[in-house]
Length: 132
Image 1 (cartoon, rainbow, N blue to C red):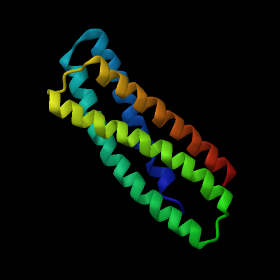
Image 2 (cartoon, rainbow, N blue to C red; image 1 turned 90 degrees about the horizontal axis):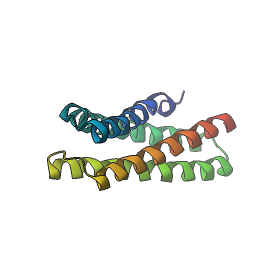
Image 3 (cartoon, rainbow, N blue to C red; image 1 turned 120 degrees about the horizontal axis):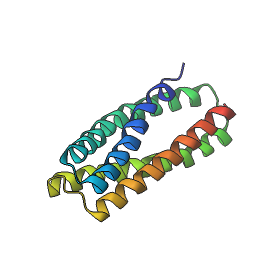
């Protein structure tokens, strides 16, 4: 039984929702939206840590069962995109902490880039599951 596909949806949902709140904060300039985005990014990072840990455990189990190299090579592309998204959101959280969670155009761009990457990783992960 693979655990990673069960837990990976949480950070994806949290991060996509954080970008939505960033867009609302940009539009309305309400501190509630900025605070909510901040907490969603942080919780998404915690969820990503759990997801990554289970991803590695599931990958080791799959390799031990003799999963083909084509599937593993395809997974590497997926995981690089997911790690890129995680790096974006880590930088996003660090930026928020450094600036007192002040929403600027570069921070909004970073949030949108992270959302694009995590949505792409989610799509690739879904495609990977259909092959399995």
